[in-house]
Structure formats: C-alpha cells, structure tokens
Amino acid sequence: MAILSKSAKRAFFNKEVPTKNLLTTIVGIATSIVSVLVLLNVISFEQSSEIQGYVLTLQEAAAGVIGVVNGLIAMFKATDGGTPAPVV
Image (cartoon, rainbow, N blue to C red):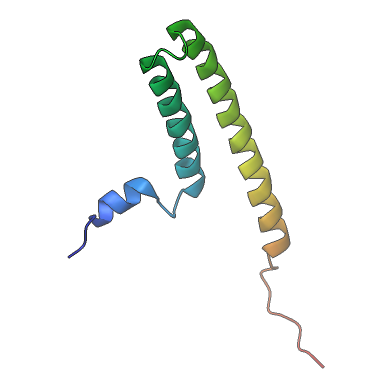
C-alpha cells in the first residue's frame, strides 16, 4: 500500500518542472523560518517584512543560477539532429 498517492508525490517533486519545485522549496523554507522567528519574538514583524524582501531576491537569484546551469548542460549535452559519422 502506497503511503502517498501519485498526485501527492507530484506535489512534492514534479520531474516535469524541477526548477519550479526547487524555488518553491527554497522560498517555503525561508518563509517558515522567518514565521517561526516572529512567533518566538526573536525578530519583530517589521524586521520580518524586510527579510521577506531578501527572500524574494534570493529566489530570483536562484532561478537565474539554475537557468544558467541548465543552459550550460544543454549546450554541452546537445547533439546535432543527424546520424553520427561512421567510425573507420
């Protein structure tokens, strides 16, 4: 018996859009940490709103880095559409 259904597993990690899942995870973890810090009165609500701006900046940076890495991998992994030349 499966613990998680197929759709629930896709909610955690969908191979079709791995970048989106990674970014969602990064933002979710950062937001959770900030929320816990506010709840425990470690930081004030005003400080948390400023931190959220940094979290969004990190999200944009992560998306850029992932895009560059994917582009480099695709560039070196790509093959021409034709058939390979015979080895003599």
